[in-house]
Image (tube, rainbow, N blue to C red; front, side, top):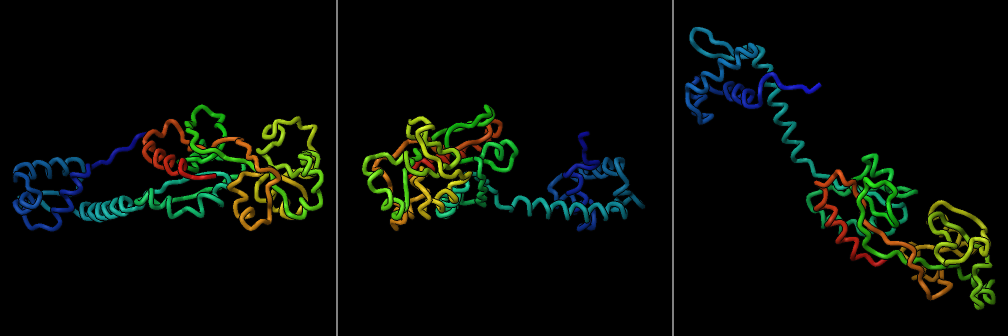
Length: 284
């Protein structure tokens, strides 16, 4: 059931001002209103609730009115505090993207949303459920959402590389030289299926282990347990230090990252546009 205030904010402000003056004329001057208008307002307020009364021809606050003024002061201070609160921009993404892209570039995001507090949330299986549940305002994810309530715009390619450790490459040099790395032990990462990325039937791959996240797949790959298909951005540091090496100079354009948001939250469109412009400049 919809609730209403017994006295309006204007009534409460009038009573609060009345507490600090000695006469109705002084109150009228303080509020810059006609004396007769103020007198009628006080009469109307007294008829709604006995917070003000007329004694010996003079208006005065009752004990109830004084308690109401305490409440009004608190409400005004609370509202002021709320309006001063920094707005939050809640961005959700995959754990790897959050760790490798969003976290390291938090200063850029803070500069883009200068008046807001940036909140980053990482999810293993993507952001769709979090968006629908209201946990985040925006999602940055690859591919397409399943639910039609989510609007999305793809912004940047996500190149995929086939990588392995130096030790693994040394031990399997001949097979790799023949381009038959699909015959060697493969470390399968969820959402990065080799049959879809490399366009070869699943039966042609020799699966060694399966992982549900990129970080664990990368760690196993670093130990020489097999080769893996991983996003280039997720192994950029390892490629730079040569702890992981590409098995081929070819990159595989598996999918594109984009900004996701709920269609019903159209008031966030300007923020979504800013986030999209930032994402478009990223080199994954």
